[in-house]
Amino acid sequence: MERHRVVVVGGGFGGLYATTSLRHAPVQVTLLDRRNFHLFQPLLYQVATGALSPANIAAPLRSILRSQQNARVLLGNVDTVDVEAKEVRLAEGRAIPYDSLIVAAGARHSYFGHDEWEGVAPGLKTIEDATEIRRRILLAFETAERLTDPAPRAAWLTFVVVGAGPTGLEMAGAIAEIAFHTLRHDFRSIDSSKARVVLLDGSDRVLPPYPEDLSGHALRLLEDLGIEIRTKTLVTDITPDRVVMRTPAGTEELATHTVIWAAGVQASSLASRIAKATGAPRDRAGRLHVDPFLCLPEHPEIFVIGDMAHCVDDEGKPLPGIAPVAMQQGSYVADLIKARLDDDPREPFEYHDRGSMATIGRRAAVANLGWAHVHGSLAWMLWLFVHLMYIVQFQSRMLVLVQWAWNYVTRNRSARLITGTSKTPLQPNEPDVPEDAAASLN
Image 1: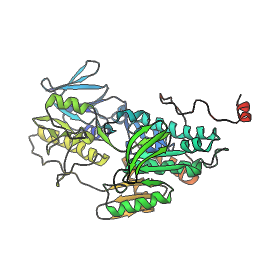
Image 2: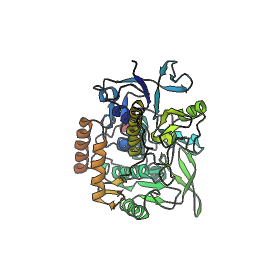
Image 3: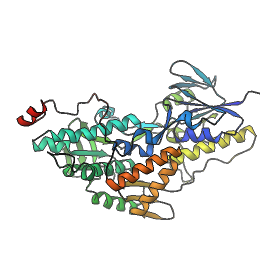
Image 4: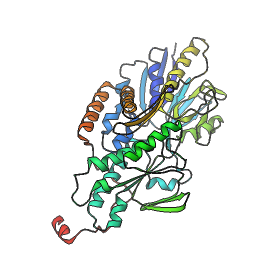
C-alpha cells in the first residue's frame, strides 16, 4: 500500500520537529524549504554583531535528516496550495501531492504600513539580514574613523534599535559590547566607547510581555551597560540619516545612519495565499486562525504551526512566536497524524510554558521560569545552557561553546567581517579626511 504522504513546508523549528517526530511512522515525509539549512534564529543577533559565524548557527537539512529513511528534502519556493487536488505547487510549476500538509513557513518583518523603512532599518530574520546588519555596524565605525567634523562623526557613532522586546534588548546589548569593549583600542581617530546606543519602544517599559519586576531588572541592566532607553516613544519616520520620533515631550529627531528594526513581525506571505485558497481567517499580523488541533477550519488535513498560526491558550491569549511553541506544535501535529492513522483520538493541543528569557549582555539576562523570576548572572547562565541544548547538531554546539568561551575571556568578536554590498549608501560621498591623511591613502 502507498504510504500516507506528509508534506512539510518550512525547515524551521516547527517543520523540523514535525519531520523528525514522524521518523518511525508509516508515512512518507517531504520537507520543502527555500533554503537548504535549518537556522537557529535565536542566535542570529550574535552573527549580526560578529560574535558567531553563520555556519555556527545553521545546519544542512539533508545532513540532519540523513538517517531518516522516510523523509526527503526538496529545495523549492512554495507558491500556493491547491486544496481540491491536495497539492502544494512550487514557483517553478511542480506539484507535490499530500494527504496531510504541515505549514510552518515562519514570519517576516512588519513595519506597520511603512515598508519603505526596510531599506534603511533592516530587521533580523535571515542570515542575509544578519550579515547586512553586521556590515552596517562595522562600516559605521570605519566611516567615523575617517571624519573630523564632530557632528557627522557623532551621527555615525549613534546606533538606534527600534523595539524593546527580547530581540531588541539582545541587539542593543551586543552593540554596546562591541562599542564599549571590543573595538575600544582598534581605532586611532575615534574613541568607540563614546558611541551612543539608543533603544526605542512605544510601550511604557522594556520587555512588555514579561512581568514588571523582570522588566525593571532588565531596565537597570541596560542602563548599567550605558544604553539609552526611550519608552513611550513612537517612530514616525526613518531616513538614511535620521530617525523622527514622537515622544511625550513632542516630536524629536535623532541623527543616525544605523537603525535596526526589532519592533514587529508578520506571518509569511504564504499565509495570505493559503487564506485565499481555503477561506481561513487571519489576524492583524497575518497569522492563520487554527482550531484546537492546529488545523484550518474546514480543512482538517492542513495544519499550521509556529509563527504562521494564531493559536490561543486556555485564557484565550495568542501564543507567542517563539521556538518552544513551534517545537511543541511540530511534535504534537506529528503525533496527531500517527494517531489518525490508527484511529486513535487525541486531545487538543496544549502548550506547556517552561518559561522565557532574554539576554542583555555579559552576565546580564532575565528569565521568567513561572515558579521563579531570575535575573543577572544566574539567568545568563541558564540562557547559555538552554540555547546550547536547542542547537540541532552536536558539532555546532561545541563550536558555539568554544566561541562563547573565547569571547568571554577576551571580549573579542572574531567574526567582525565586512562583507556584501547594499543599495543604500552608508559612506559619505566626500569624506572629511585631512589632507595629510588623504596623501597617505594615495
